[in-house]
Length: 306
Image (tube, rainbow, N blue to C red; front, top):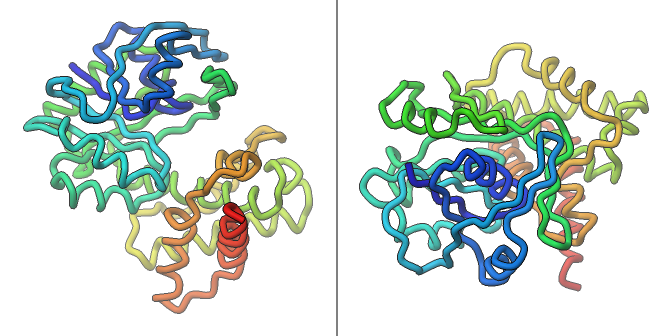
């Protein structure tokens, strides 16, 4: 099975690298600078699950590369439009698009561009970053990529993907209910990224302060109510389940959005918190914590180019 990974950064580079390690047929669609870097240094992963250095196949947008069975999309939400254009020529008759973006809005956008049947569900849990030399640093036990048909069926193509993804040093898992899994991840990441960027702190110090812990709980409850009004398939008891998950995180854990802010990068505020807030306003829901988080992010973004 031929897999095209869009980008070779902290997420796509890691999971694509693990597939390469298993000797799957993987190509990376990258920009010129990253292509040159990979040609010199190779794709390098430093991980608690084992290090890897390999020489990947790379292409630039527009280059001929033949048909692909799966396109793994792991870009930031603000790069989605560009990514759509860059993969358009590689989406052929039987191509499946597997997006790993946070949130949910991108699913509809990809389906509108390429057709409902082309897009399966996906998400990942991983703490990884790209250092100044282009090395992928992966530091925690969790390195999960979860995928599945959005209708829940065990189709021939999803079984084929499952077979290709099995036996790697990362945890690729086929889900029985990927729609619910994506909404639950959305809740988790919107809360974690929101609270850590608002407080400018890792999760540990926030939850150690009683008012901080209460604010996390309130935020999760607000998001849950918004999602239910949006007819999302969230499970009963999900707020407490997410709170337990946050309690179990390492004291120094930072969200990727917080790390982006520290580097002066754009954020996915509109894609994550903004979409929830838009629904809340339509439904006349009071979501003061979510409002404060979104305001904080937008004020930050307004200062980026000044």
